[in-house]
Image (tube, rainbow, N blue to C red):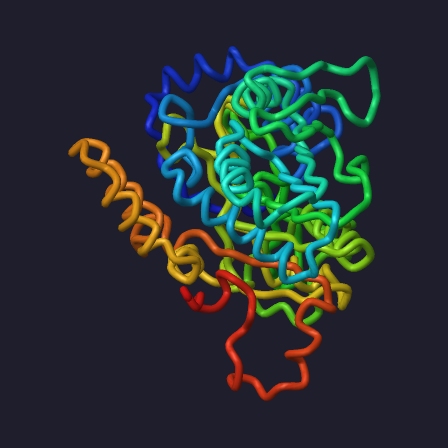
Length: 421
């Protein structure tokens, strides 16, 4: 029979409520009938159905962000986070030669709070940005979330566009900049761009592989023969197309998660940065090719069994940054990963917090600021969970290439300590 892979998970619901959720889940029924008809499916296919099924996918029908939803992201916790990323964007634009057009592109912008904080910084730095032609471009597949973003960033000053046009919504931000929404990166106009992907790559479907005596085998999702309404993980008997092509030759882990779609996206970013100039900043739960089994579910801020009630919970996997780096080829310069704590400290979060505290006399707001700061940089909280990884145009650091390593600090904000003069 198929050998089972044990699943580490904590289920906070009682069995009866799980049963009820499952009977309500059209995705669950759809998956059961699909597996019955054609056999086990890959973890990537399971994840894709659960998250982005057009009728009942988690991202399509839910507002899952914030205190009432299933997870809270850094921008929701503190404005300081977004402000420092805004400073990073402007600093990279300046270092790359102050292009006269500047596209801010965010992939999967959540509720829009990160973009909102960044745009506030752009307004404050009007004198630095001068006459630059700045525009905002959001890549978002969820129609529901695009409405939240429009409300947050424009006060609902947007028009939905007809039919299958590449730009499906457009308008003007509260700060007076043109803003457009797209379903795909390819549809964004070419030009100097700073790309941001905050908690974007962790929701892209992964394939899971297990090393066996017979070589690499793919982990699949199958129906549990003991209880036909339930799903379980099994290891494929023979190689699959994915297990034949996605494992790196020098792989020494016993269990690996690979995100080919994430690799394709990073290639598209690298290609644009190489040809049009710009930079990308990827911020996510991540590791540099060391972790193995990180696939997990969240529901109501609690860990949730990934195979129960598909479409009702957020599914995520840590981003393998070593894989993204390999997929960029040699088109761009890669920096990082470094921890969120290091990046924010390098960006001057400590002095920014002091300024905000000096200007704030309300005790509860002060307490909130200090709590947010701690959430962001405490190694036990988000400080070490999140990694920052950047792609830069190869010309950006050309003059530093000839230098001996360690003789000059890297002149890229966030990846080296800022000289605060």
